[in-house]
Image (cartoon, rainbow, N blue to C red):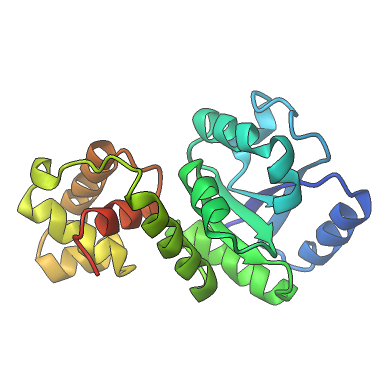
Length: 216
């Protein structure tokens, strides 16, 4: 039996929201629990505690959504945010990632592609297309001259090993098998990495690793 994935949709176009809801209803494991045109809708509302995935349009995000995304991630850090976009500006992609965006989906993608991304993001916590990955790397490179890099000497040898494998998109269980450690131990290393690097998600870990020349 598939786990139901609860979705929130923020977009100021009623027709778009209704069309998206109609398409997603065709998939029994997807449930649009919240749909709103109001970016400032209270994130304290009880229904947000049940949300797994937020879909938000990049045009909405460019208005007041920067604060909205930061506020949402602060109140509900487990929610995965998917930004629908046709804008591959590396600075924008990088900035939204810093604020907690977990994935970016080109607006030209089919509903089947979107559903696959929703499911992968819910299961693994990370999904990026090749185009978005390139934009992220470019954004990172632009920021390198301005950013103050955190020193890597606070990371243990084992933590760096786990970081590199996470960057290669291995799951916790796969990393445990490779390093011959228990999955619980890998969970601990992963949590330590988030704390020490200040990353909010796996993309942040990748950014940290690139900035500090831990991966190519």
